[in-house]
Length: 180
Image 1 (cartoon, helix red, strand yellow):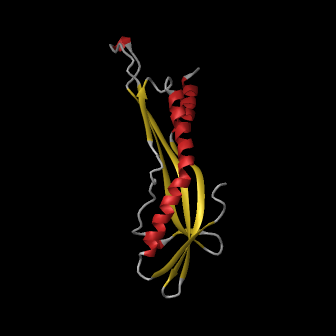
Image 2: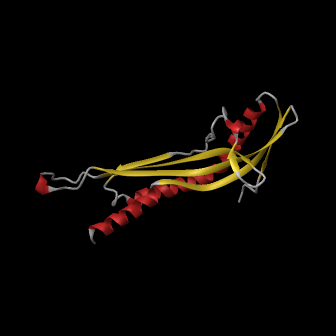
Image 3: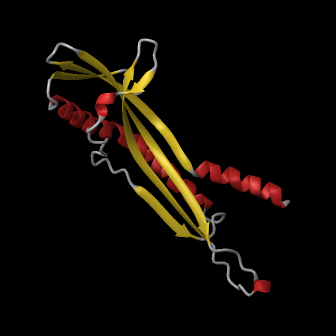
């Protein structure tokens, strides 16, 4: 294999395990009734996300240059989280960030067990199977935890909005069946 092909294959492999992967997204709708009679309809979008990163430190043995040991080590991190966005949907379907979201607490994990996986051993070629396994475990955990996170976060969000001055009522409904 020539060197340019090797670099292309390495970039393709790294591309699979680095970056962010949005796994599942659920939308709900909050209706906020103000004491003035004004009503706002806000889309709440929760997204389960897996973030992956990897790097290799050290280098191969180069005996002709006096380096006798291969000290390459692969380090990777796989993190999961649930993000929440509050959006206004215009009559033509355009979605804009809701200006009233300032001051609200971010989505919490609700004790759902979202976690970070880290490993460090061998060079990245030898550690490929372990990285892929950790990434798949994180994907499964994030999807499983999404509903629990939403239940906790939805209650927290409604409570925070009800406490705002001039808010008379807050109601929530799903845009579609959350079990799909």
